[in-house]
Length: 115
Length: 113
Image 1 (tube, helix red, strand yellow):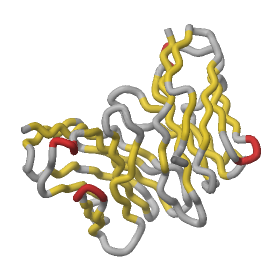
Image 2 (cartoon, helix red, strand yellow):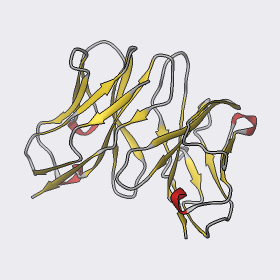
Image 3 (cartoon, chains in turn yellow, cyan):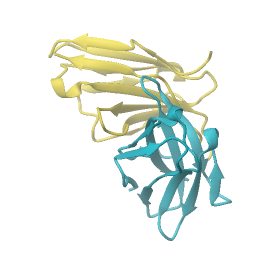
Image 4 (spheres, chains in turn yellow, purple):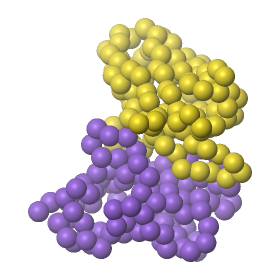
């Protein structure tokens, strides 16, 4: 199956530690998105890339968060000095964009628990 | 800026009954509209989308939605639900500039026998 892959699926960490999540998109997709989802809420947009360029960042993406997509393939989302409020499901999605929005294909998410 | 309001946080129904999940959006430009479904412990899956053309769109699993520009709504319907339709449903909006999808808070559909 060549869907969107996210790793790790679950991460438990202590407050103050750094964590990194990886997303491997569908290979021919040029756009990659990160969302955050907390219990009882819809996915909240964090940031997205077109190829290797980060085109938009949400105000939710504090300076403790950084995302990269080197070479326009996989992406990483790093959270520095984690706080309990960072506990959430982090979702990655990819799409083929060419002049109009296309369907986003989502991975199964990476669940972060900050103790 | 765009926003989405899902008017019902929870919708309980009996099996084989019809269901409507309501979604209203706000946008100053032309929009693309989507419904996604999230089954327990699974990723989000596209049910259907409206990009242009016919305002009635059909999706997977017997769902359909109608785009109503004057009422800025995109309600999701199914004439007869199954137990397996129990899931979280999300309405989302984007625009022709290709900005990221903005999601509503979701509606939990619970189907019982």
